[in-house]
Length: 401
Image (tube, rainbow, N blue to C red):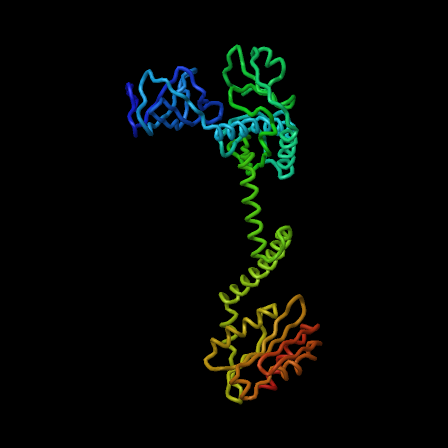
């Protein structure tokens, strides 16, 4: 809590400084190391490492056993697996930077980064979103470099010599006269003080997971490597297999099936929208206002309608028969693409009273230069002459009324 103490007891947390440390402190986008300190009877967890001042490495600690006191000699152990994962991601960030410059152009400059054990994030200057093709090319370039098993070389040189050699540095970063260079082959040479692999092959492979905007002319790529990349690919594969099983197709046919299903869904939505518009309009009220009583004792509607689809005509009948005061029948006609459509339908009660949809449609068909058929309860017809609709409806009136 900001106060200097001589010792920490078991269960306490604090910050500890060592005369020398193997722990890397968070800087340059790379997260700080974690690990363990042991001093004989004491066991201390190192939760994070930071450098609030240049050259001052502060370890966030928690005493799990014994105590930790000023003057203790400790064995400091960095979490090796975590450090190795960070190293893989950090070197991959450099390689990604080089690949972006090769694919997008030399205007690409680093604008920020995050390097952790689980993933990497790289912000860079660019004036537009990367296309899928560009990202695929960047990923391919990066993985070509990684799988070439290029040894990593780390050395110090003067800032002047580094600049003369064209070694990449961060714009606006303050460097001393002596700088540290990390090279992963001629294609990737950067000024960096972070932790890196000894050979690019240690990275395994890199997988870009996203690309997005984080500001004006600044883009962000997130990626994973090694075991993280394998876990990501396995998750994508599992999702693909699950989707394929749901669709009952092989995994590599999923996109084709989804495209086909999307088309069907779009058609359903279009029809549903039309049906909703029909229900919400005056179509039903206008038709119900034309109800007449057939001599056989059932209500019947014989009329034109604005409905332009055979399926909608059937939906129309489903709604009308529920709104009629008594079980009845309809004979309606519409026009689709300049061609007439006829529908006759009746309830069981109307059919029992003598209504015969099939006979009506058969008689009406010639008037529209067409034909159709069906059963006494429902029949449909199409034709070529929409001008004959009125004649067809008159035929129906003469037969029913």
